[in-house]
Image (cartoon, rainbow, N blue to C red; front, side):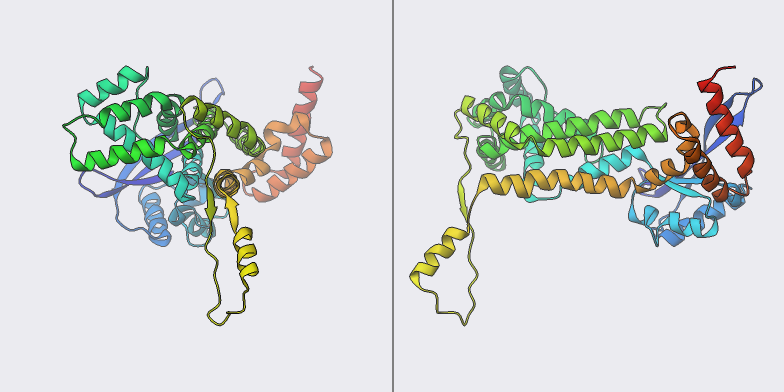
Length: 394
């Protein structure tokens, strides 16, 4: 497993970790992980990094042909299907299967969704702005605490557990946050820039769009966070990871059907805050050909009417659905490798729920893939025997 990050001197350092299997004196197999080394390297292409990895393994007298797995984050230079590190190494050793870092992949799915449209970028930007305003001085923080019984948190770019912690108090205490901002705006010590930021924050928090964004993002982030906690547990296995990702996708698809419930919930909050719970009507400009001057007045009126679209419908289609679809699309893309691994190895832990025919077929496919390591007939025989022992204890 290899990952890289700049250190305090801004030098790119690659971390090498080796995972291997040992057997103790009692015959129990244990999975071990050992840190091997830091290597300074500023090269970023998949070809350069793969050569660095192979050289390090060779210098450490670790035969690459014995490696059966490689794990990195989901950066394109690492996980790329054609020019990523994993693809370069698999050409040299097809048995060295690639798997992504599960939690990092899930964080990236959320990050992609948080940048999929301007409304979402604005929402998270305003969450951070409100935190910056209130945390910039003890006086402002004191005003905030006098209105809400909770603390605000800044956003994290990658740790989505922290992002849930940021959105949760923001979504639950919008009336108190709005009252705090209004009181802060009256302070005479504010700079010109801060006054502009506070005015913008008040305007946004007073909008129905903010209330609706807070309502559905909290539900979405909470679902992602729950799965993240399971996946990053030390005892989590491949099948547990796959099951949770599949359940998350099902849950998100179910969330799409709850638009009206979320919308009605936001309207209740808006009414309680004395905010008009409706979207304005948006008129979209109509393109006209330079040579087209034949439109009658009636045609122009009907054309404008056809281009009128309520913000509610637009928000549902271009924000709510788009965010959920982006997460689901990224889940399928970023977890494709782990799905394939689970499909290849799954019979080893799911044999009790399989028919004998499926076990025979899957074990033969597995044995063909790893013909250098195991015997096909012996593996199939042992799995079938193990299944019979569990079903009919001796």
